[in-house]
Length: 116
Length: 117
Image 1 (cartoon, rainbow over the protein chains, first blue to last red):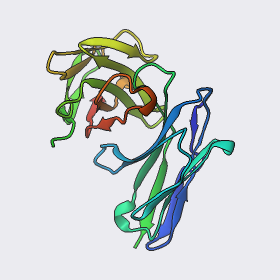
Image 2 (image 1 turned 180 degrees about the horizontal axis):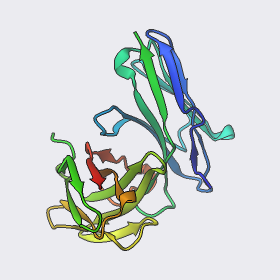
Image 3 (image 1 turned 30 degrees about the horizontal axis):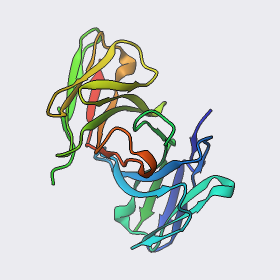
Image 4 (image 1 turned 45 degrees about the vertical axis):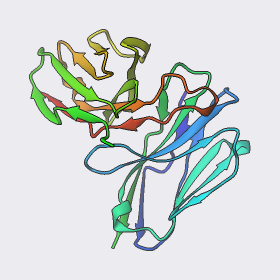
């Protein structure tokens, strides 16, 4: 079974619009960690944000914010006032405290295009 | 602080050949993981090394192997290449192997683009 689901395959927005990327996860662990990574065309996955399962406070960091809802197993990511440089593929990932080492489970990614 | 460095960035190999990819983790990081990324399968975990020992392995055939050196640098090898091995191979490093309650964040390199013809 897929541990991380990103239902949105592709999203296009016009510059300065807000955009929310959805992520739903599945785990039996009570302690786990959720991440968002950004992958520009160069290939490198760039770490954006991380949330621990025991900390449900939602935060804002610059133009990024995230909404962690344990009740619905969702970890959505919002970019405010999108810019062309935000165009990339975004991956949601899960790591389980009860798992082995640092194995991460990634979603299939959401390709975001910001149109100038 | 230098990031994760992977070499080579691009390479083309013929079916049946073997390939070795190299990864230098962030300074001070002791755990190195490898992932394969393809359009069809997405990002899949290959294996993780810590203290020169393979700690965890994904669901890949034995043709995929790796090792880690005492300076934490890692290499992965794919023998008897198949067309389906064409992919972006990503290396990631983290501070420790097990993060306990705080977990670990893994940081990726730019990857090695492998094309098998």
